[in-house]
Amino acid sequence: MEFFHRSRLLLSMAMLPMINWHPTLKSGVKPDLKGLVVMGSNGEYVYLSEDEKRVLVEKTVELTPEHMLVIAGTGWESTQETIELTQDCADRGAHAALVITPHYYGGRMNEAALLAYFTAVADQSPDSRFCCIMSPNLRMLT
Image (cartoon, rainbow, N blue to C red; front, top):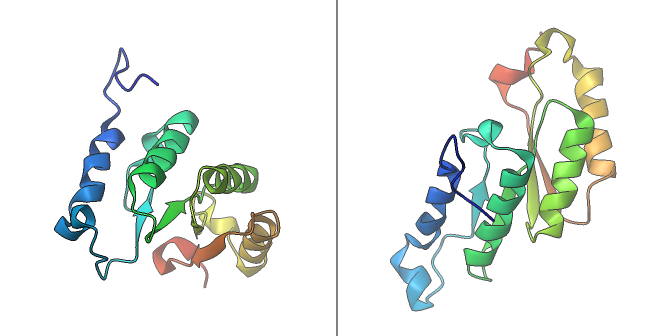
């Protein structure tokens, strides 16, 4: 996989060495840290290509000690894209999916739409854990 592109450097790969930031991870002592979140809602995952997202999850799983969970942010505006990314991240070893509320069509995100979105994603998700993020500032419900 080429991480240097003609137009830009895949900066998300720069975070991979940070997986070993905790000194006890290298020593084999199990820290209180139970897992890592990759592509969380505060990250720049929206700027990554579909391939880059998958490689980032795969490399994070590869570098994370076995006793720790890897939780992959898979929420997207499209239900189908969210389902596909959730399945692909599970196939690459992620233990759980972190799915945030779609927000682009805020005026259409009523309770019925959100229930349909999260139900569809959960129903088609692998047997991994599934976490819904109901961010109040993204819900736009009255």
